[in-house]
Picture 1 (tube, rainbow, N blue to C red):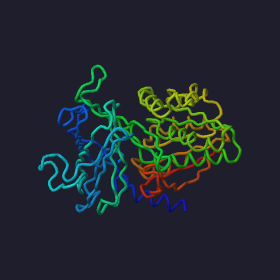
Picture 2 (picture 1 turned 135 degrees about the vertical axis):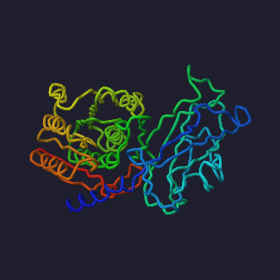
Picture 3 (picture 1 turned 90 degrees about the horizontal axis):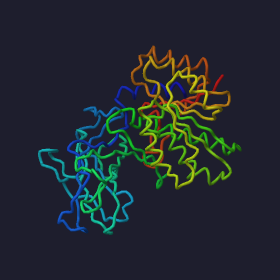
Picture 4 (picture 1 turned 135 degrees about the horizontal axis):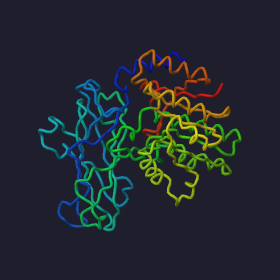
Length: 399
C-alpha cells in the first residue's frame, strides 16, 4: 500500500501539480473603493475581477486544461446579509478582445477569464465587505481538476467613512477558506507577493491528518495537547487545527485544553500574527494559549524553550537538500518518545537519489507511516485523496 501511494505520487508530480489549482486575481485588479452606478447611497454597484487558475507555484501549465474546458465561477459577498448580490448575467464586463469567445462568468481552457458581480445594499450603514469566488462544478464542462476558491477584500463604498490614507489602487488581500465542515471555515490571509506566504498543496491534507490525530488523543482520555507548527508559513495548518478543536472537539471534551506554538523566520511572523487575530479573536476567549516565536532550524537554545510536545506539524518543509541537516537536527531535538510528527511532502525538486537519501535518513531515526488522507478543507465535503495530487502525508514516531 505504501509503495503504491509513493508510486502514484511520483507519477502525478510530472503533471505540475496534478488536479489541484487555485483561483487567483490578475491585472487589471478591481478598485478597492467602489461607486454605485447612479451615485445614490443605496444604488447598485458592479465589481469585475480578472482571474487565473494556477498551481501552488502560481503557474498555469498550458496543457493543464483541455481547450474545450469551461470553468464557471460564482461570485458572492461573504456575510452578505446586508447586500443583495448576484452574478452578472452573460459575458463579464470586459472588452471583447480580452477573452475572445467568453460568454459567461469564468474561464475557458487557457486558464484565464473574469467574473462580474452585481450587488446593492440592504442597509445604508454597512461595513467593508469581501467577495468569495468559487467554481461551480455543475455549470462547468470537461473540468477534471479541483480549483480552490478565493476570497478578496476588503471593499469599501465611496460614501462611507474610509480609513485615513486609503487609496483607490490598493492591491486587495487574497484569502483562502479552509472548511471545517460544509458551513464553517477558517479564513487565512495569503501573501500578495511571496510564495512562503501561500498555502501549499500538502496543507489541504495535513489539516485532516492532524485533526484526526488530536481527536483520537482526546477520545482516548488525553486532557491536554501541546502542538508545535514548525515553520508554519502563514499559520494555516496550526490555526485550522486550533479552530477545529474549539468548534468541534471542545464540545465533546469540555475539560480538555490545547496549546499551539507556531514558529518561522522573523520576516514571516507579521502574517502569522495577522492570521491569528483574524481566526482567533480575543473576544472568543481562547487565544491566550497561542504562542508565535521566531525559530531558525538548528537553533538548539531556542528549541529547548518548547518543552514536551504531543504533536509536531512539519508541512512542506522538505524541498532543498541544503536545509535537511538543520531541519533534521531541530526535529530530533524537539521530538520526545511520545511525540508524533506529521510531515506534508511533495516531490518537487529532489533527484531520485536525494529523495531516497533524505527519507532513508528519517527512517533510521523515526518509524514512518504513510497516510493517504482524503481532504475536505477545500469545499467542506470529502474530495481528493492526497495521492491524487502527488502529496504524501507521513506520521513519524521516534524509534
